[in-house]
Length: 576
Image (cartoon, rainbow, N blue to C red; front, side, top):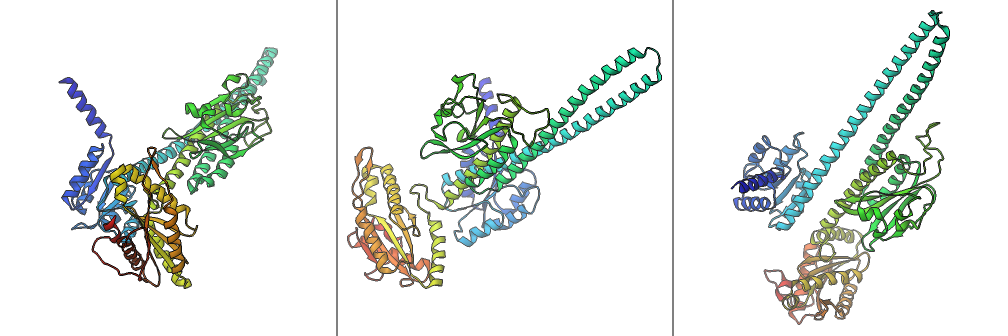
């Protein structure tokens, strides 16, 4: 019985630490389903059936995330979001709209209201959970950055107080010297003893002043480093790609660790290699490209220092470097390797922090430099992981995860843009609808994994056999759409026929087993001959595709050249 109570207490404690999600929807079924699913994935859920219930709930507790329906009886989701964003205490709460409204204007309206994402009903549970996890993680990262900034400001204030205290001590010492000197001048007795005492006091004062000067210099250097860290963080946050960060890293790492030459290495996942993307200082010894296991820091996932007196500690990528020490700092995000910061001590030649008598001529990295290197690595890891996360989110918003082609949403946006360009310049725009013949056979005969392999390989095939200006998209299921800017009808038809012939020679293996050969059916239409809107041209190409499948498959049909048959369901899906 006591053991059961302990388990219940542990479960309640875990639940208390779970993120709180406020779910608002006027449909009790949707509300119940989202509540159950999120609760099963260790989230705390507060359900609300109306917009006013959302505002009342926010008056008593602050959730980590809000899932908000658009269409609600008393107050729609857009108005609720506007009110939330106008409250300075609640405006940072991320809002994800969940709605059955699938129009682009509705989505834009949601983002203008302050929403961070928009999910269309009927939704997929995995998609909802993935987006919930992503935005909660982003919210937590933002809070962590704000906390770090507050901590840095506190450290600056503390250092300023320490400097003031040092000034007081200096003034006290000066007062002591003045008092002692006056006493010596007014005392004639025991003159030799007083002179000796004064000499000893002068020596002590000189040592104290030297120490004081050293402390003041040290605090000044630390303050300057904090300023460099702040500037580096601001500029890294402004970067939109990894390549933009390299000059920033090159610039500030030299300022923060001027006594060392260095290089930034980044991981290339495709080749499983670490390669130099930026370097500074004198020429570095060692390889510019190597595999991760050649660096002990990447193996241990913590800083590794190489000393000349210990050749057994040399990383293999250093090629038995001799001379002063070097160190490697891994750049990690969630224990995953992003890259590596490498530093090598170089002969002293002055630095922004140098003062007479304070040159660091050590043959090894001191503790302070090591700590600075680790701090630089932490800043770089956070900045680079944020940029990679933004790139990933951008890819997920425009790319189909299975085939790597653009998704339907991107296709619709691109089609509108290309139609405007074609109309403005008076040129045609070709549309090709592509469907895999008898696709269900792959799933039935070899399993759905084999079907996914076929879709993935066909995506690569289409991408490798179109022009750079053409756009290949996954329309849905086993159906694909090709947008060919400037292509007339005859050219579009020839391109489709070439793709059809080439696709028949594809050989795909699944689990060392050769799959059935692939054949494709094509529907061809062009703007403006077969429609003056994107929807009309797509419909014409879809009707032609249906005709190609209806008349035997493995062929190309052109809109307007065959007897078209209109049905209620999507045409190409009925004859798979």
